[in-house]
Each structure stands twice: as C-alpha cells, then as structure tokens.
Length: 324
Image 1 (tube, rainbow, N blue to C red):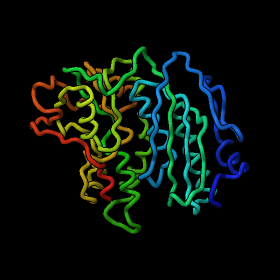
Image 2: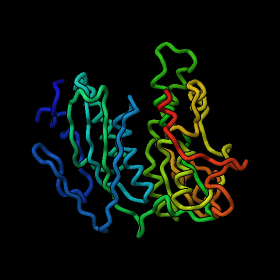
Image 3: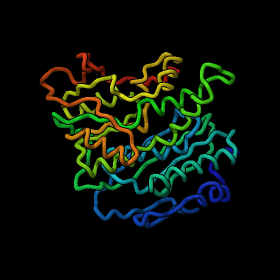
Image 4: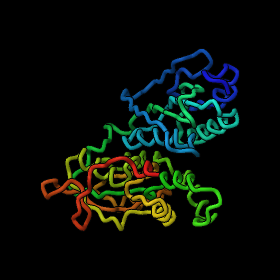
C-alpha cells in the first residue's frame, strides 16, 4: 500500500464502517472529515490512559484494546471510548489492516467500549504494525482506585496466571519446524489471547471493596508488586509458590532463558483487599481465576517487597521479553 494516509474510500471501508456505537456517552462519532470526538460524562470525573503495542506480532488488535482498557479497569473505571492510532508499514496489505480492525472491534465489543476516533497512516518509519490507544473511562464508585491504596493487613490477590501475554509473544518467535513444543501446547498458548482483558475483574473488585489494583504489564509480577508497594508505602510479603503460572509458560521461559516473574503479563491483575479469600471466591463465581499470594504490612518492618524467605525484590528493569 502507498505511504501516507489511507484514501477516504479505504478509511471508510477498512476502518470506519466496522465501528459500532453502543455507548450513550459518545455524542460525536468518527467519520471522514471529522477530526474530534466528544464524550459526555454524567459523573464528572474522566479517567484517561494511553499505551502502545510494539512487541507483539499477532493479536495486535486485541491487545491494543485490552491493554488500555486494563489501565482504566485497574483504577476502578469503566471504559467508554478508545482513540486508536495505527501505524502501518508500506508492505502491509488491505487484508492485514482489515484483520487488525476485526480484532479491535471484537475486543471492544467484549469490553463494552466504543472506538471513537484515532488516526491511520502508512509509513516507512515502522517495519510492522504498531498501534497506540488512549482510553476514556469513568469511575464506577465515588472515588478513584489507584495503586496507592494498599493498607497494612490487606491480602494481595493475583488474577488468572502470570506471563500470559509474554508467553504468546515467545511462542510467536519459535522457528518453523521446531519440535520442543507440541501442537497442544501451542494451542494452549494461543488460547491466552482470550484472557488479556482485566475489565471484568477490575470493575467487579472496584464495586466490592478493593483498596488498590494494578495491572501486571512490563516488568511482570515482581515489577507490579514493587510498584504497588512503593506507591502505597507499605511492605508486601508474598509466596512465589502461590503465584499461578501455567506449565507451558514456564517451559517457554526456560527455552529462552528468561524469568517468568519478570515477564509482561497483560491480563493478570494485582488486587489489595481486606478479605482476599472471600473476593477470590466471588471472582471464581464470575469465571475469573484468582489466588491470594501474600499480605501487606507496615513498611517499618524492613524492605519494600519481600518473599516469604525474606529476599528483597529489586526495582523493575527492562522486561524480560526484550532479551529475546
């Protein structure tokens, strides 16, 4: 496809005609020649977050929606609209653009969020599809939930299983004809794509007493624990053996020589709650796996984040995925 903006015909056929508008809050929808959108927020407070997708090669559309909506859900806010930028290499085909948009529309429908604007451009500045999304959301409760709200004595919960996004990226990088991983194992990893949203558990936890939440992205579960601990100025003691990890994820990490606990994990969320086991039971009834992995304590006891063996957790560095 030619460098530059899509033609108006392509923009309408590949992008705009696919958009569905279900949110009453959206009062100006995207169309050819319209460069701005407008959203009415009845409760006044708007929550916004922006994230790019740069490391993934498959499932880009789904991750574009979920990663940004996850940030909003971790604040106890319901996503309303998404502004999405698509940067496409000149080698891209119309079929590839259409497929990414189909993923975006499906994921947006699952999250009950409208795509309300953005930008699409073909540019030699990228050699594969790069996306960036900004989410507009509104809190479901009276107050915004942030990672700063952890209180001493809170149970620390993790949903789903760690490394799930990273496992998908690692599986994509396996060479053709490899024999170390079976077709069944690779099918299991591909199924992780259906679990990269935390909107369901985030909104539910916000309505059921969560003190703090943090989605587990770059830096993995250890990075998220460190960031939550630092933000709240509390210590967190956890048991690594209680952190849920799928066996195929462990196998992929061993294959590439990387640490599963420092691997990007979109779809996995940390929740601080005074009655963690009760919340886990309710989340299970909702269809979301969850486990209590530790407890918060007064920081004066010692380090910021420690395992049950008393080992301090270092501040997060570059995600393990960039070693591959």
